[in-house]
Length: 58
Figure 1 (cartoon, rainbow, N blue to C red):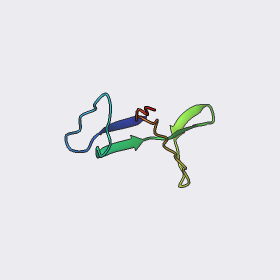
Figure 2 (cartoon, rainbow, N blue to C red):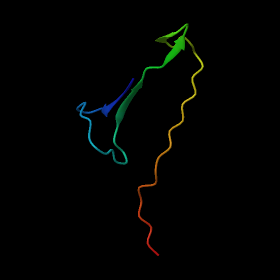
Figure 3 (cartoon, rainbow, N blue to C red):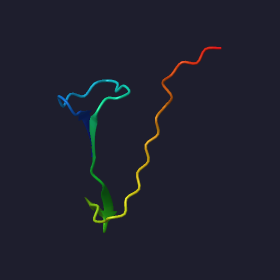
Figure 4 (cartoon, rainbow, N blue to C red):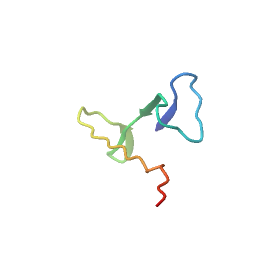
């Protein structure tokens, strides 16, 4: 489950821009004994990659 929104008004714009303050929540689940259960752990690694939005002209 992933949720994200602007911090100031809790709206979810189509695009975020530089310097937008936002809230990003993730709920992790794991498949245990044939069913999905909330993840019970303390060692999660998460990586964000930003696609370069800048136009380069030569």
